[in-house]
Image 1: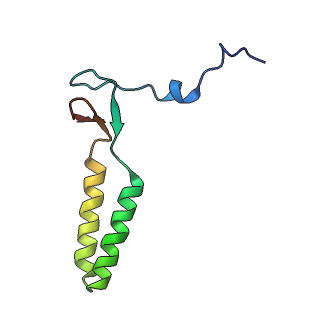
Image 2: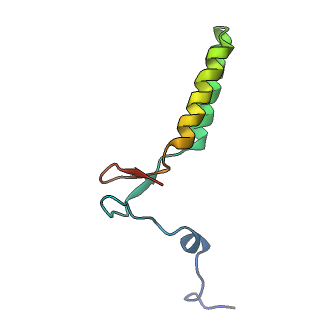
Image 3: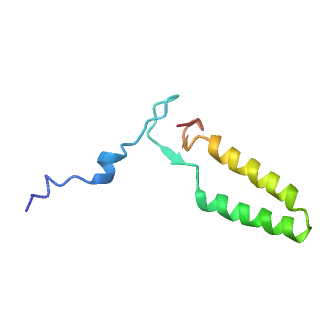
Length: 84
């Protein structure tokens, strides 16, 4: 059985915190939230279905997915810079 000093947390080893490339701060927030995207997609689909405009709804959903894909996942809480 290894000592407590030898046990390494896998999350710390696999995902070291990235500093902000602009200001060097380690105060980083993850801004990509898949649950929020899913709720927005369902809401847009429901609204498009209600007003019988599925083509417009599909276009809006496609634009939301493209925006989600190109948006950088991290944002510095100190300076507001977004980065990968």
